Image (cartoon, rainbow, N blue to C red; front, side, top):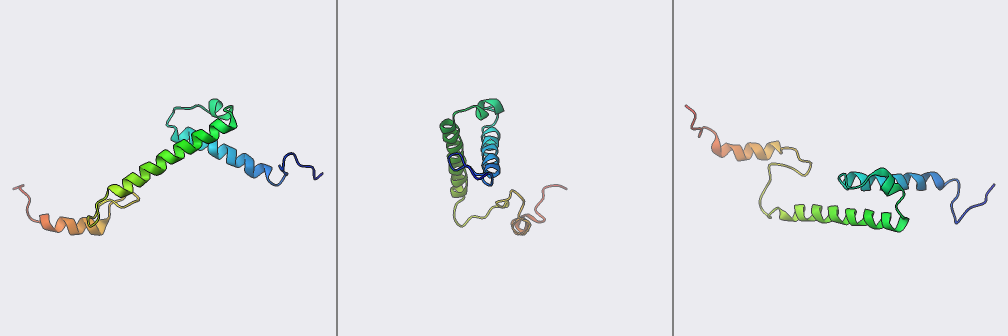
Length: 103
C-alpha cells in the first residue's frame, strides 16, 4: 500500500522518528537538567524547535568565544581535545630545568 499522509512514507518514518528522539535528547542533555523527558516530548513542535535552536546557538557562541579568546602568537599546553600537548610542554619546561628551590 503506497498511501502517504502528508508525504510521510514507510521509508522516511523511521528516520524522522530517530531525528525527533535525537532532538529531544539534545535538549535534555544540553539543557543541563532544566527539562524532563515528558515536558519536551509533549511540547508543541514549534516550541521544541525554538528551544533546540536557542540551545544550539548558545553553544555555538560559547565555542566561538572560546576559540577567539586565545591570543595569536601564544601557544597553549592544552590542545583542542583537552589533552596536554607533550611537545609544547617539553619546550616550555626547558627554561625551568634545574631551577628548583628544593634542596
